[in-house]
Image 1: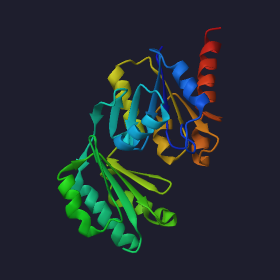
Image 2: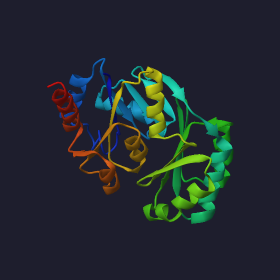
Image 3: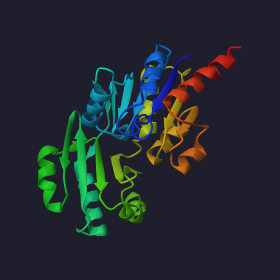
Image 4: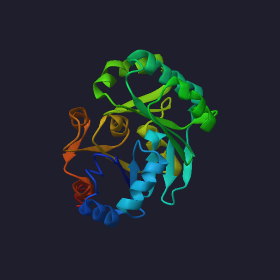
Length: 256
């Protein structure tokens, strides 16, 4: 039976500046035809590629942009979901109108291999966004500099823009097409393999991992995870290395 471990990146695989060597070694030793390691992150292609270059972590596939892109180990995009850029502009205008122009926030927009950062967004910046992304985008990450503001209006954004998927993760708001999240990325991966016998696992630490936890057979929360994530996980572990050991131990118990 093929096993797949879907791992969140920031706060799970990457804690601090570097990926721990024991986790890197454990991933390398475990990866095989019947055990795949897939990273699932809100990061865009550009940011993820930089991470892989510096951290030297092996992976079979990666789910990027909170489910909007899937790439293989050669960094080729094998699937991408998009939505209208006009819908994003409506969200951005709503945020400005709700929290006021005094609140500064940056936006990072992605389509394909292209990502553009727009600092201190203002409505007058729309022409620049439309110049770079005239029709569609796959994801947008909004970074609001006052964290307390986010909890005040997050639910109102979701209510007013139910045609989009909006996830919150710390100071970040990730926007994708409706129903596109980490769970959607997992669904597309399983569809790609066309194998109903796959056993799926997930490990994560934050709110945008909830959909991922709900879509796999067995979930792990790292010790530094949010309490809500811990509550819905099957087991709490220290790191990726321990997670992989538990998976292998479960398999060994079943064969005896």
